[in-house]
Amino acid sequence: MTQPLAPQMPLDDFEDLAREAPETVWLEFIRGKVEVKPPSDGNHSEILVSLLRQFASDDRTWDLYPYAGICTETGQQGRYLPDAMFVRRELRLGGRTWAHPHTATAVVEIISRATGKDHRDHDAKRDGYASAAIPAYLLIDRDNNTLTVFSEPKDGRYQQAFTHPWGSTVEIPGLVGITLSTKKLMDYAD
Image 1 (tube, one colour):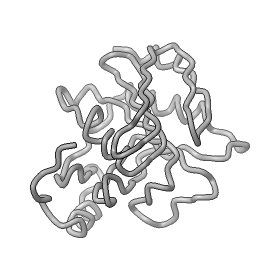
Image 2 (cartoon, rainbow, N blue to C red):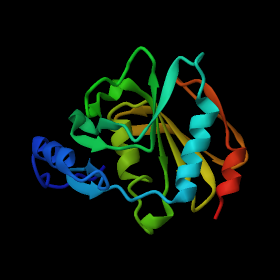
Image 3 (cartoon, helix red, strand yellow):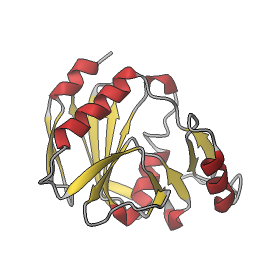
Image 4 (tube, rainbow, N blue to C red):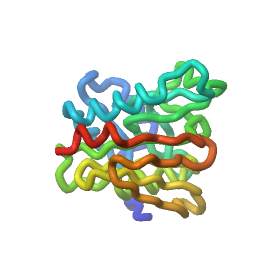
């Protein structure tokens, strides 16, 4: 995992900057660098809504939170805004801006078409989630119409990665223990 020699700024300064940013600007601190999370287009939002609908239920033991901040990376030095985060109901997010990584049982990132050749979700964020020992990372790749499930974090890397084409039924392993239908995602293929 590549780290910059020194962060652009102290973590406290980043948190102040992120807190004071306009509502239309979402900032992340990835590998010591301030990054702007790109805006979502309509299909990105539709994919997120389809996930929320699929898992909206009072009898679940966890909730799916969109765009909640989380501490990541080794030593919790990263600050990411995943597109969604699975949180067990007994571990409410509360009033904190950046949730502790043990709060999340899985995170979801949806590749935005607007990011072009930006591969943060493919590598830097994947490694940051693994370093924070988040049990599962779901990467919804709109360029390839696939969903990849990364699991079993160990020593800053996910040990398992399984890629599924949209339309598949996908088992999310570990603490989440759910089955996800990706058939609806096919409606949003570009």
